[in-house]
Amino acid sequence: MLLQKAARPTELLFFCPSIATNPLVTVNKPTPAIVSQSAVRRLPLYALLLMCLAYVLAGFVGRNAWKTEDIATLGYIADLAQGQAAWNSPSALGSTTDSLAFLPYWLGAGMLLLEPWGVAADFAVRIPYMLLLVIAMVATWYGTYYLARSPKAQPVAFAFGGEAKPKDYARALADGGLLAFISCLGLAQLSHETTPALAQLSFSALYFFAIAALPYRRNLSMAAAIVAQFGLTLSGAPALALLFGLGSAVIHYLDRSASASLTNHNTQHKLQILTLVISTLVAALLAASLNLWRWKVVSPNSISNELNDFSQLILWFTWPAWPMALWTLWKWRSHLFTRNISRHLAWPSFIVGVILLATWATDSSDRTLLLALPALAPLAAFALPTIRGQVSALIDWFTLLFFTGCGIIIWVVWFAMLTGIPPQPATNVMRLAPGFNYTVSIMAFLLALVASAAWAYLVRWRVGRHRSVIWKSLALPAGGATLCWVLLMTLWLPLLDYTQSYQPLIKQVKEIVNTTECIQTHQLPQDIEAALRWYGKYDLQKESENSDCKWMLARSEPHHIAPMNISPQHWQSIQWVKHPADSKKSLWILRRNSL
Image 1 (cartoon, rainbow, N blue to C red):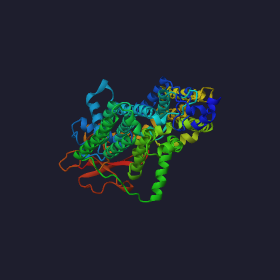
Image 2: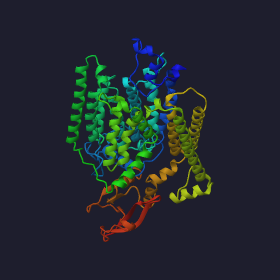
Image 3: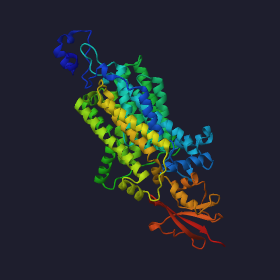
Image 4: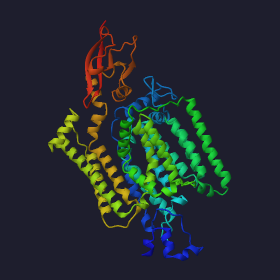
């Protein structure tokens, strides 16, 4: 009983004063982590792999590309694969992309050129993006593992032994870090889109791992850091690569425990810092040579409104990791605000702080905030050894009610789409998606049943009697997030494809214009052009007086009037078509007048 009640080194000294004079017993520096060996049982590997597999595949398999960035990326990739754009300047129909990213488009175009295993083109493009998400997950796990191996991250040493062993403790926290990463609500959609944001997420996670593991895996970490810096630079985030590189060099310099772990610590420590600085400068020069440096900072119109939107974004996007991360910073505050920094707190805190500032200062706030999740997850994981029973129970009950309620709503709406009962959800679906007809997929239905059964088993395990493990508080959030994402990508996928893709709009165009005829475009958004070329198989050409195309597709003017800057002597307005679920996504079909 004395071993279980002893919570701090000072208490151990009070009960066992001989420890202070015993040279065979070492008392750790005060730390809030109190963990026994029985509490660091690993999450079963098969369960963790199945959860990750379900999370990755759902959203990449079986759906169309969705509006705006997702489908626009396919346009850039198609241009590269078909030789209509230079590989050092990705473009869609000759218009250079604003994302200033190269590597994500190179990966997708490379898969199109390889044509692997005869799979569909849109799925082939998604293969490297699936691998990028897997890399982000693996890097988050190993980054958390090596941070937990840090000497200052270790739990309290008990008087008579029984505290968690360093490797077992690190594995348990790594499991918790990956669960925290998966459970973040903002990760689901953006991590399954074929956009540069996913590449940036992957390389941010890789750089986070590189610095976390640097004291233990020197060669591998330096190679990962260099790859991550160039990957970030070529994925459209050279400024973050620069900040990460300089910040990591400073943190590595201030971390005395890292230098002490090296055999020839002075020389090797300085060499590692020099390598980080040089690779950062080389990546910056590469960005300058490719003209990737662009000022993307925007000034807010209203500080109060921007602050309100910023706060709401953080609250839901990073839930449930952010309250646990704040708890970590509070409980470990004596280790954070000190001259001799603690890598397990300083490194992820630095990344999260930089990303939060970038999120506030840029207009793509959600895609920028996405990059903070690999570093926010370990901060949430380090709260696990300090959470007591009542707080853990509160998290479990809230998570259970929230995700179970969401799952029930998804099933009820699916049943309403299928049968019209209950009538109110069916009416809401028809109002939001007029003309939608639901078609049943037996495979999707079976997968949804399996996911729901797995959730029920997880809930039963969590509320049942079992030995306490420190990652248990994040098992339900990660399982619930995976459940809802799988249900959405199975039961609701036809509805989401109907409302979020351009297939309904393309279907209306095909009823009038034959796909074998060439079409001129007039000020069409790039995402609509990409959808017409990718899914409609249209031969689109830029507007030209020398063109002999019979048809033209033009952007609608306000109030859906025909384009006024097109000569009525040459073109006749035939029909205005719009997306059934989004009237803003519309265009005019015009036909050339006979001479």
